[in-house]
Image (cartoon, rainbow, N blue to C red):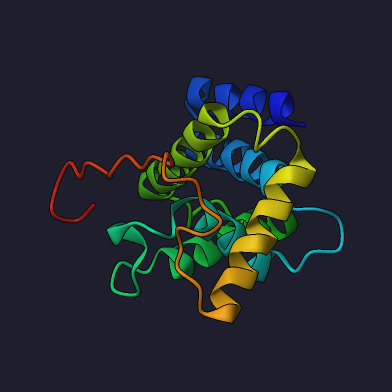
Length: 156
């Protein structure tokens, strides 16, 4: 449910505990873009890519796909092993960035993205488009938006 994801994002924003805020973000992202039976390390980046993969930020050099997989692995280590030490403010910032961009596009296109099923269907169509070698403008609306990340320092 999209409302639940928004509530979780609010809980993340209100949390002063870094690992807890990170976990709320990851649960929100998963609840928006995944379904039971998915291989999350494949489907999560694939579904985020459907929303922002057309941007310069998504290219192989920036490593967004790899970063999303790393976030998911950190989430698993936290949930299953209690490993909090590997979660950083950068992880929260990146997950905030991904969630913000996905949500902006969902909200701007309520007729296209009216349910979780429609989000997954959209992602599947984008993947089919890739497989067929079609232009990214065939499935994705030209009105999709992307907000670039603002980095506070050289390490971020």
